Structure formats: C-alpha cells, structure tokens
Length: 240
Image (cartoon, rainbow, N blue to C red; front, side, top):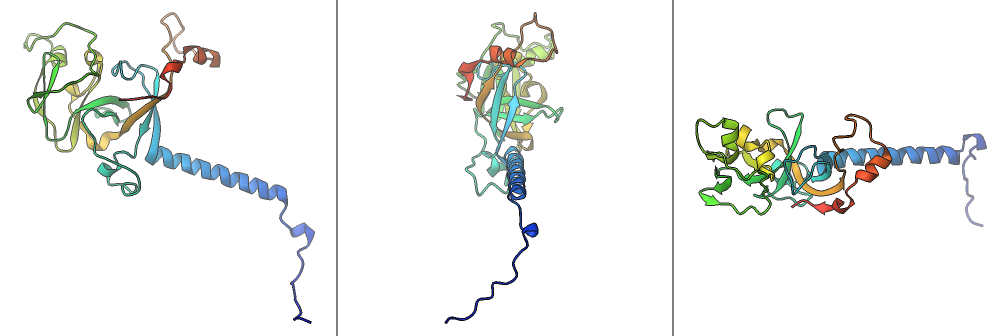
C-alpha cells in the first residue's frame, strides 16, 4: 500500500465561504475596477466635452458632444504614456480643446493655425503664416463686410479682420475658430500655452440642437425633448 495521506482538519460548514458573499465581493471588485479604469481613461485617454457656442461652425455645431483624444499629444507632454500609446506633435489644422488662458476653469475648442516660432498675420480676413497665405477650406464667414486697418475703428472690430504680424512663442500655438466672424480666439487674447492643450477633438458622439427662443430658459429637458432635438445625422461624425 502506498503512504498514508493526511488531508488535514476539515473546515466546519459554518466557516466555509458562502457563494453569496463571494459573488458580492466579485461584484464590488468589478465595480471598483470599472471606476478605476474610467478615471484612468478620463485622465489619460479620452474625455467628453460639450460645445456651447457657434465659434467652430460649420465644423462643430452648438450642442455637439465631442470626444477628445488626450493621449495623441503624449509625446509633447512626455508623460508616462508617451512610450506606450501612438502619439504625434500638434499639427497645423488640428482642432484642439484647451483651457482658456484668461480663465483656466473654462474649456475652449479651436483650430491650430500657426505653430511655435511661426509668424502669423491676417489681412482682410486672409491668414498668412511666415508670409504665405494659408488655404482654409474649413473657414466660414458669416459677415461679408471687412473692417479696415484704421485706428478710428474699434480695436475689437479691427483685429477680427486685420492682425499685424505676430511671432508665436516657442511653447504656444495660435488658434482660431472656424466661424471667423463670431469667435473669441487668439486674435484677441494671444497664443495658447502648450501646457493648456488637453487634446485633439476626435468625433461628435452625440449632438443636441439648442432650444428655440420660445422655450423657457433654464427649464430641465425631458428625455423626450432630448430625443426630439437630437441630430442623429451628426452621430459619430469625425472632426476634421
């Protein structure tokens, strides 16, 4: 006969783990893991932003919900993900979300027009970078009139259509709204520091048309109202 086997003391039934307790623990583990992943993704990968103004029309509309790629510029940030995820420098033409330099609590969305070290100028609404005109098929002008470069014209109006040559700092980007005549952008408060840029606008994941002027302002929207105002044709439209 083989050697004796001593299995050790048996666990009394009252001390054995119960299936219900194990399921509860597993559920909590899954929930905690999901929360941790969501926080990780929001911090390093993607984040959703609402667009409250028409400054980027016709590319991004008021009421669009935009998904922002936060890791694409990891190379610039030299963060922990810079070696793990595909990244590239910020390019001219990128639509970016950033913290407003004059109030970092607010997020803005604009298009990069000039890069660090470049000279940017606007003549009669036309953008020039390093003396060369920039082709901008995305630019939209709601006002055909052009304010002249005249000291008698209010500065805020003149700078909308005329901007003397400006050198972009080595750690900043010059940004404009696609809706050039209704955008608060670098023409008025200067280039955006690189450290303020959160990421690149990737796509519109949901879009809700603004309420009509006849509707009561501030009243909570019902689910049926949101469905009625949803612009389904803008779902998952890439931002270019």
